[in-house]
Length: 191
Image (cartoon, rainbow, N blue to C red; front, top):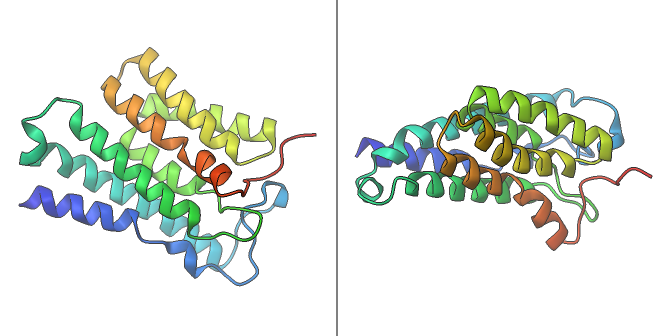
């Protein structure tokens, strides 16, 4: 019963579109803005980081204890957690859009990775994601590097279950695919 409650609370935190409360005329999607969020948007970014970390922690604690999943394969909880992360990324990606951009859910991905990815893998993937986004001058580099980096570095270091890094790595690349399918972008590539 408690594990079901934890999973429902984690799912509820992931589906809460906090960015709908952004300050008017704020444009956080353009990569070349060259300034940090401030005021209400900074508060929302910190709240989003705490929301993603809290939701991921609730899922990580509650999912393996669910009786429905405990008798299945050992990778089933990781698959369900990754599917819920993918659903949360979908909501986060489309919570704030305009005619050209989708809001890049970088803070949400950082909060999820801080809890669900082993610290050694998360540190290396973070450096890789920052470097890729600066090289491409687009937010999509963060998600592509986080996706491939989580899979490859997690598999090479072997510090957590391979099913977790594979399924979660696939889910972390979802915002790029969703933005392309919606006909929007996350910043222009380097010229």
